Amino acid sequence: MNDIYASRRNILIYLLVVVVVFAILLVSILRKKQSTELKPFSAGIEIKYTRLLMGTVVEITLGGDNEQVIKDAAAAGFDEIARLEKLLSHYQDTSDVSMINKFGWEKPVKVSQETMDVIDASERVSEMTNGAFDITMGVLGRVWHFTKDDKGEFIPPSEDDVKKLLPLVDYRRIIIDRDSSTVKFAKDGMRINLGGIAKGYIVAKAVDAIKKKGVKSGIVHAGGDMFVFQEDGNAPRKIGIQHPRKKDRVIGTVEIANGAVSTSGDYERFFIKNSIRYHHIINTKTGFPAVGTQAVTIVANDGMIADAISTAVFIMGTEDGMKFIEDLPEVEGLIIDANGNITVSSGLKGRLSLISEIVF
Image 1 (cartoon, one colour):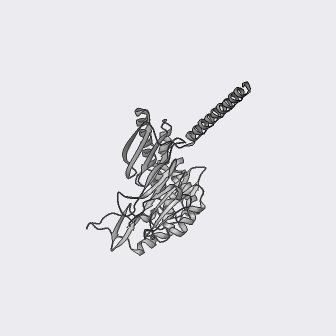
Image 2 (cartoon, rainbow, N blue to C red):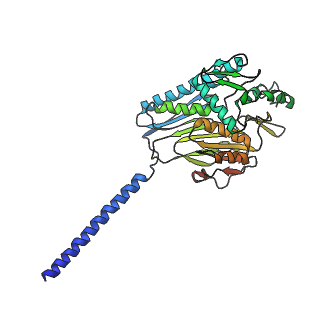
Image 3 (spheres, rainbow, N blue to C red):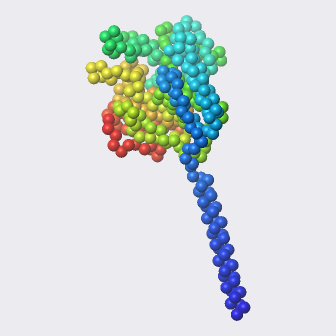
């Protein structure tokens, strides 16, 4: 009888040990699962600030636990944008770019390190794209104004007026001396325009200024350029992709945790004359607006590079543009051609959600 009781007791002890071990394993698994799951974005409070800068509405949306810290960080971001705009905008009479355009034919022009960094990056992208991206297309601004005449009409330039300027479009004729931080033109009459790359650079620099103030989560959005940042472990944000033909509508969303999103489209600055859409993204080979593309969205780690590549790919077109994107590390993209066909890079497909029925 004692042996029977001892046997039963051993069985109970064994079962109890099994249950305890199973419970410990279950708790361990649940804790591990919880630690590896992405958390939804949560930043206590989230505040959006807006200001007119760089010829567009700039939105800075920041999250955190302290409203004053958020406010100070937003101010720092706007201040950085305003500071860099004064250096890089050809609309600012005293900017580095304006000084280069005024005096670069005669002598080397001393510029800031920021301007040198952007021009240096511009040259690299120009080489990578075989000149599809070229900041010396700024000279074409003499004939492409996108402003109405006295009769209230938009008048495109003639082919002869454009052809006269094409010999001045050549990034290889920018003479850069990095040691002395000077820029000079090799040919009289040349001009540069950093509009296709500077905004992405400035937005990224604004994010750096914001982070220095202690804010760890937010979005800086300026026209077609955006930078998303947050702490590791948070779920990615869903960013809408603008419909190129229907204002206030999107074609879908892309998930971004940390990085830049840049969109170039023929709907940002344009006019229609005799059923032809004339827009501001100029093909550097023809001197006229690029054809065959409605919009390009690029996702990358670097805001400046994303901006430049979106412009270049728009000009390159779907086939060459997508091949270019696929060959670049840590760069993904989406191209909408003139007929509304959408082509998506291989690395973006898992992060992209398109509206099932998109009408163009």
